Image (tube, rainbow, N blue to C red):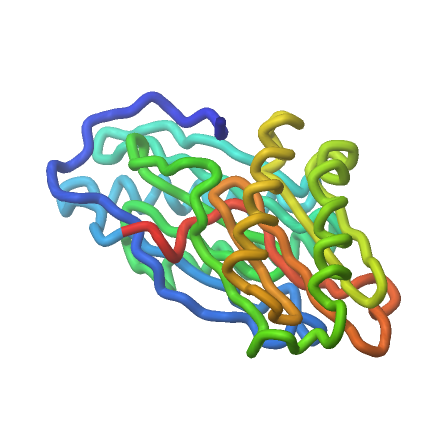
Length: 266
């Protein structure tokens, strides 16, 4: 399961692992698509001898991703190598309910954060509430598509009131079939509970459904009776929120782009 990666090339013998620097978005109902959810940086810089060439390739990749975000909500590419650098894989995805203009604006915000957050590391990942953008050097270690990378739960258990967990579970139970039928993105509400799920766009329907099923199960375990939660696996995410006065018109607008690397990868 997972997206194709370029052929592995030799990488330095030192450990190359993406570490998490976590930042949690504010209350889901007030979230902007530009809010930072979490971020991850490799613990290794580009080797000194190839840093110049790699940075040129990364600049070209950044320009390509930002350009493509005006015409599509999902895009992946691999840059050509140069005499002083390795190929670099890049990917972005916007939330399925964003307009084309919002998607483009979100990616234009996320991509420059690579360098401001991580510097010249061999891989970086920025997850905003409305999109994510990722790059990694060819041969970068991969993780399971259903590995949990990051989660955030609302404060306290039982805050959704009497019968909340039953309402939440009813809303969540429709996500697996919803993403399968909805080509990887689905949002729904049930009795003041809003739920949303999204898979990485090139997953098969079966892999997408399996990933969302795993995310739902993890959210129920990790968040208990909390009135809101977001669980990010490597290839999908789910989000839910309880609105005692009713789900806002147009949905809650919480959540993120899908895959990522954060909590749990060491």
